[in-house]
Image (tube, rainbow, N blue to C red):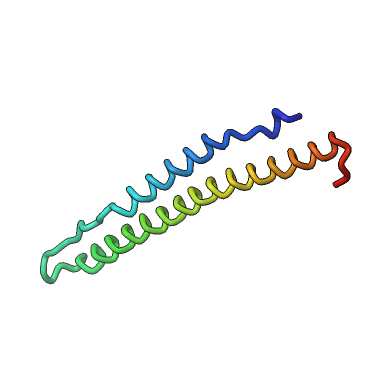
Length: 98
């Protein structure tokens, strides 16, 4: 049963770092493709499209950053629970009431 609950904490933390790097890269994307022809009927749409695309990258980066933080939190949480269970098991094994 212990194998079913095994977690590779270093891999979970590595995933968190990879996700943080990806979010940082996304935050560095600069979208500047707009139509600059004065009086063009599509200029306003082009500008709106540029803003929408930049906003989308920012929202995705925020979500990926949240996934990164969740990976780190999960790894720490697994460690805390594992230590608590191990401590309790040692107390039970030693005949010390909990």
